[in-house]
Amino acid sequence: MSQKATLTLEDGSDVSFDATITVQDNFLDKKYFEYLKTLVLGPEFTWNMSVVLGPPPKNNPFIKNDPSDDIQFTHVAYADHNILSDFYSRLGPMFRDMQLYNCMKIKINMLPRQDKFIEHGMHVDYPEAPLGNLTSIFYFNTNNGYTKFATGEKVESVENRLVTFPVHIPHTGSTNTCGAQGRCVMNINWSKALGTPDSITDKAREKWQENYKIQKINEKT
Image (cartoon, rainbow, N blue to C red; front, side, top):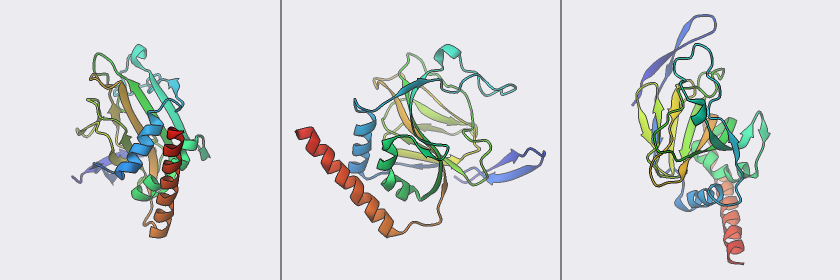
């Protein structure tokens, strides 16, 4: 559903922007999705413990997280114009499907299961980003956690689902309380290309298929 929102700039002026939230189920090819999921949820994937949002900025009524609940495990694949993880090289086909042109940050988050739902607070990943930039959240596993938006929408955590929205829309994630050990998502802050050549897409798919075959062979040996 298309809708508009207003952003107040530093000079005090207001600008209207498209606030459409797009949900795409079964976003990736099934085999490619299983390949990525196996990597992320596998025993060799590296995680760092960190806070979810950190100390609340002054005068921000949205962030009300309890410091004792402010914990997650993260894996940063790309940030500040630097590739920080080999996992980044596995995302080519996904970038083509998204028609990704430029990337600001890619981070995988694992929120441990809790005995209650915890919303860590409304926030914007890149408040300084130009209008037109996007945030996408990709869900690696199905659970009863969710993403909630300041516009009122709530998106459930369903594996292989991609939700995309303008980077300036405040949003918050939650923990899960079901049998899943945690809620695993990938946050991508990016801008969209006008088009993607099919030849590049085909080459990217051939590369992940080759990596997938090598992984399966190694598992058997």
